[in-house]
Image (cartoon, rainbow, N blue to C red; front, side, top):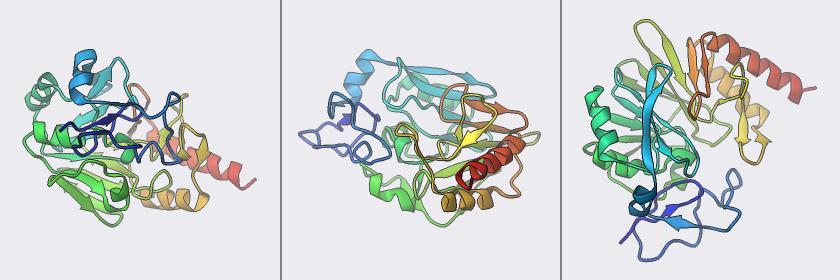
Length: 264
């Protein structure tokens, strides 16, 4: 039986003879059902019309889908930590080989449900690596797998310089990944900190496409979680949407700007 995939968000579902009535991710108020109604495809159909876009995004190797499909996120590979951050809807042999050539993937970490995509298919293609998803976002998992590891609490040390930090506001389990390298520190933000188009600020959003800001109490929690965490660069959810250099100061200024506006 096929694993039907939502055309709007690119999330695969458990195998079934017929597609579900609705995608639980897109029917949530943070996302939206496509203007033409709920639509479905399969990985095989997507493979016939799309390809993987695999290239460097600043200093990290990224994998996306071309032409754009679903939510146009790209996955990022941090080989020093053995982590693939986020996944996409399309898995190809060429992309898997490229990841292996660059040091391989020992674990997948996902920021929030909008980027679950084909995470189980990616895990299987990479040899059955664990997929770290926060327990608070279990409700939105649409394809079950023994490779899923639901972590709890506010921090998780993945080893090799990589740490997951729960930063709520977008989803209850929204997560960022901090990686401390030998000469630089990165924050891979997903949508927990949404990099602005000026690439000098971030915003804090409950819903990005529906333009609903996150609650102040949850932004305060995120601010507290990141206090004392040093980073040079922030990588946003898609190609080029990054703050390169001075990112810690940019995030601090963004917190101040947010509270100046909501408390005014």
